[in-house]
Length: 97
Image 1 (spheres, rainbow, N blue to C red):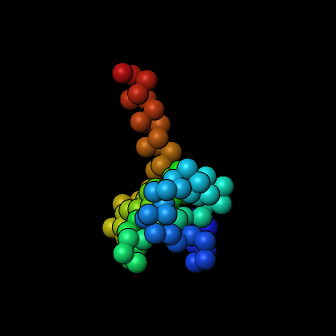
Image 2 (image 1 turned 120 degrees about the vertical axis):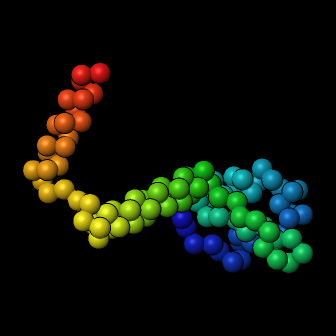
C-alpha cells in the first residue's frame, strides 16, 4: 500500500460525500488510501480493492508463517523423505475414493 499524502489524502466527511465519485477515482488511480475525518478526527479509511486484497494476503501469509514456526518449535515437521511418503499416501487415498 502506498504512503498517505497528508496534503491530499485526508478530507472531511462532508467533502467526501459531495465528491464521492471523484474520491473513488482518486483512490483507484493513486493507489493511496484516503482518510476521512469527522469533527476533525479520523473516522474511516477508503482503500482501493487491490490495497484491501493485499492486506488480506499479507495477514494470511503472516499467520501461515507463524503457524509454521509454532509447528517447528513443537517438532511437528517432516524431513524430505517423510514429506514424500506423506504426499504419496495422501494422493493414493484421493485416487482410491
